[in-house]
Length: 267
Image (cartoon, helix red, strand yellow):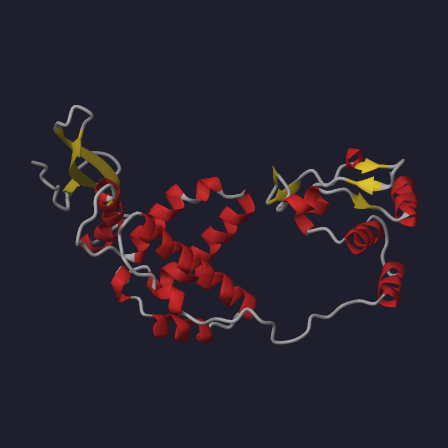
């Protein structure tokens, strides 16, 4: 007969230290590979970091999720705990630029507003009204909604909830106005006002149409001067070198003879 494990709350206690001030300790049980129960403990932080028991309980809940996530329990879980688990499990497999974007969105928008909510407390209409109140572009709001949706997908995958209220949240990514574009004449006027190396930089961006991260990653060896083609091999985001964003980005790109001449002169 298999006995289903109960939700493990663990215990949080203050531990006195001679140096560095008192610390918070979280104690819990862990099952070893030999199927034996062992008592474990982890230092969560100092009393200066988390002055009250309420402060430490928010952090401890993340540890509770880690030690209970292998089973499904009828135990309320907060958005903050799920996001922490999502960051640990999902972000490492994403591109560095995507990681930084997700972390920024989570810490700047989602967690401050919804972090203390339980999974079942988040309602579609409330999220819609919140998104409408943000002074952001529609595309930015749509990105926030998409990431919030992924957090709930992660929670469902780990069997922490049966529903995803963000599926019912309506948020259009349509632009409010047509983006401003430059005509060839405008670009010519702009280039005449620029000194080197900025003139060549703007010319490369205009003629090749690459992403900013791909332009930063360009090297002279990426150009085939005989065939007048360019092979984008890398992108650079926040100083870190990675692969181009899509497979289509790695296809040979034709280079106009006039641009090739200017680049070789610059070289």
